[in-house]
Amino acid sequence: MIVNRRDAIGTVAGAGLALPAAAQGARAAAPAFTPDWGSLTQGYRAPEWFRDAKFGIWAHWSAQCVPEEGDWYARNMYLQGTRANKAHVAKYGHPSEVGYLEIIGKWRAERWQPERLLDLYVAAGARYFVALANHHDNVDTFASSHGWNTTRVGPRRDIIGTWQRAARARGLRFGVSNHGAHAWHWLQPAYGYDPEGPHAGQRYDADRLTARDGRDTWWDGLDPQALYTGRTLPLPAGVRTIAEADAIHARTDELWVEEAPAAKAAFVRAWAQRCRELIDRYGPDLLYFDNFGLPFGQTGLEVAAHFYNASRARANGRLEAVLNAKMMPAEHRMGLVEDVERGGKANIETYPWQTDTCLGNWHYDRALYDRDGYKSAATVVHTLCDVVSKNGNLLLSVPMRGDGTIDEKEEKILGEIAGWMRLYGQAIYGTRPWRLHGEGPTKPVSGMFAESGPKSPYTARDVRYVRRGDDVHALVLGWPDDGVVRLRLFASGNAVGRGRIMRVALPGDPAPLAFRQTDTALEVTVPAARRNAIGVALVLSGSGLTEGSLPDA
Image 1 (spheres, rainbow, N blue to C red):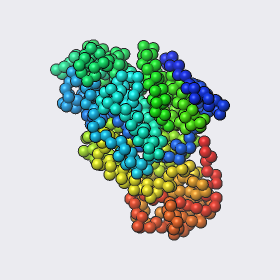
Image 2 (cartoon, rainbow, N blue to C red):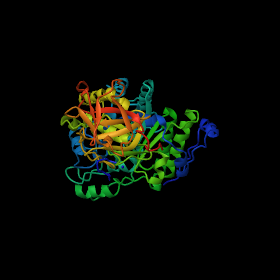
Image 3 (cartoon, rainbow, N blue to C red):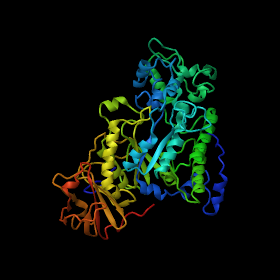
Image 4 (cartoon, helix red, strand yellow):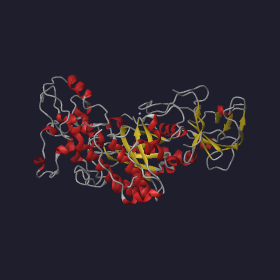
């Protein structure tokens, strides 16, 4: 999912989802959404709660966290020679005998304390919380009609329901992420085999397992083919090298496609039904699709319309829903809230948007922990400031171990974020874009997967601007060595920073700060006692400072 810089930076058939009766009753207030882009783009507007919240935290937690080998374990363990495959063979055995199904059985969540985690997230400044409802591994973390869900396997708990109750109790908006539309092709390597070595040609567990094999086991009564999605694109016989197998996977099952073949019509119908159960049973405020556009064409449009109509039914006719998808074409952008994975935008966006990123990898990665590879608190806060200045929100994933805990390094980072947000969060929440988003020498990221690394590249010379009411907030991405912040856009005579500055203060602090306006910058002396290496926020008050700001979309 080009910066103009000088001194300023500048399908298959639908599933037939019907409206609930309550939603039909809301027609008098506003027309019901229908499953087409015209209805979505004309009737949708991002709710104020989302625009005000700015910062959310995400629990991207599945059985794939158990091995602690990072992302895409359920797929990569079946690709000979990958890190996940080597680790799986060493820890658990060969995937022809011990497949991903057995990893699900090892997921116990025995130390999970959702209330404690959410208290940490609230302290860190999160205003909404998102929980993973299913990943590409095709396991639902809620009580769904799909047998492979966590009330029956793994933790044997309704994870989404538990998160939802705890989040609501803390005043958080609650969201869910749905990644399951890709399971039908993403899991196809489970029907493959090793091209090389002592097990060459011996197909993996998905190719042989049936419901009969579960008799008297922990998964008795379930069908492994419902988990692995059935043979659609299995590795053909006769492949003799890893390179050849990788090339076949790259051109068949690895493609990030949003439609499914006619042979997978039943999968699409079941996916839509599970989406509807998620919406109707848990009433999420936010629904994140890990898709480029909406999944499955018309079926995705039907789910989107159902989500919006259900939101209105719950909120007495108000639309409180946020629907996320990626790589949206311009003509569809106003119909939902676009998400940019691990990236950003070059300039202020007309419509609200979101970036999602992670302290480490999406699924828990012990090697990353060992080498201190997490994002710093400064990186997270600076990303938040940059995103907010461009009309966006930040959704941050904090990787969880299979047992339901986060590690002490993650807790330390959250604590540092909390310290900054306590001081300066008032300059973030409830703000809107100013005329320009910022200034400074450091080039911001733009586009999908455009992150620069775990350490922030920004300095105190980089500033991001937002507005609230008649004030402008300057978010300074570092602490100046000499204790003087220099805002060059507000130099005397600069046409961009027009208006008269009468007062500069720290957020929530009545004491004014000393400042002077020169022909090169507005120079503000910041108190040494408030020093914070992450940076500082300033509130600029006066007359005419916000004139000419971009209107709200």
